[in-house]
Amino acid sequence: MRPTRFETFAIDTVRQAGHPLVSKVLTLKEAGGNQPFGLEVAFTTGTALRWQVIGESAPGDKYDQAEVPVEGEAPIAPLVGADLAGRPDRASGEAWLAQLLSAAGSRELASVKEWSKREEAKEGHHGLTLRFHSGAKVYVRAV
Image (cartoon, rainbow, N blue to C red; front, side, top):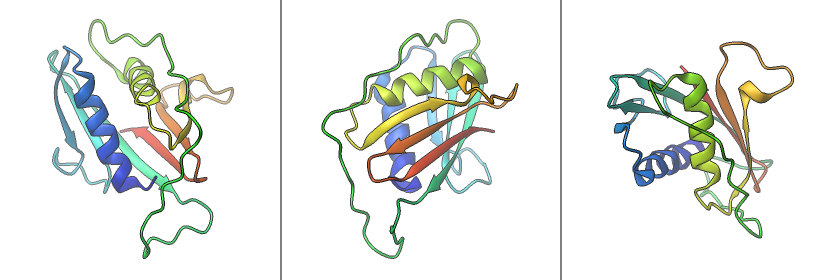
């Protein structure tokens, strides 16, 4: 999944989740960011979390040609355990976004990994790595 389509997928997924703390979801550009792709999630608490989207092409993918989505047999199992209670921050936002995207039912998505749960995790570095059946990857980095 290319960054342009992923950005739309992620924003639509957050909006459709209808979490009571979410007040607004925008692209990073709409929110005044400099990154070409990403999203900002504003919360009723006054907090806003920004996520930059960076893509890694599937092998052989050419951006001057139409994207060919590749689906797996079934959607991945949703991640569980995320909680936005209180004032959302990057850590809780990372887990929450991972849970939402993994539960969205996309048959293109092969896996979602939270950066804070990796063996080589660095304190304060929050984000996600999403792998797709096409071989493409999307990195969602907290900014």
